[in-house]
Image (cartoon, rainbow, N blue to C red; front, side, top):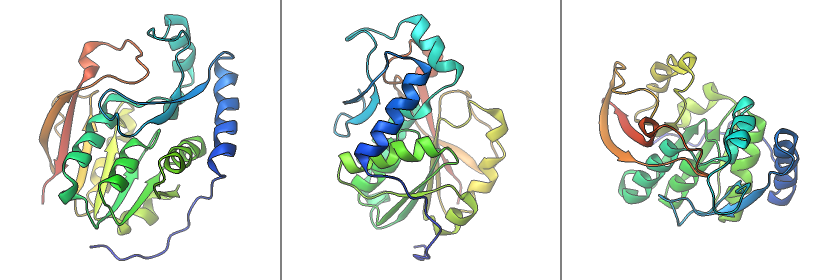
Length: 232
């Protein structure tokens, strides 16, 4: 197990203040948008504060989806790969229990929250986007779990027994991160954007279907998620 060395942590306001800040940011993109706590299809036991349906009960209208994707508030969606990785952690708590988990690019925080629920001794969510860290804080407080926040990957890596990352390869500039991640003893990576990822030191572990929530109406090819793990 990793040691429990202190790292410089990002401080975030309490959940209510975080939610107010994120509401304001979201409405700058789409004035009628709101955040609503809701269960996702694959992780119903971890309801998250996510983008509320613009038209209740319907897929997001094309114009709303386009406005949001122009400057994506990634933290307001629970992406398909995040759900698959979170589900795997919850279904395999023996692989997580007692460990230190560093989740990179947490978005809404679903993977970090699942790690905490699965029994990790320590969970650190690492992101350079302060709004994503606000979202993690908001959702962690709503679910009464503890997740530490950091914007310093170099400081987080030595702490990790397990490093997790989901839906980060939409940006091909992030591919070099895969080798940096291998500084951790074990890496779990979930992705739907690159079919049959051929990255040295990684192998497929599982494949599962999932949809991003709220439903963006993405191409079906992005609904197939592959989970990879690092080789020993």
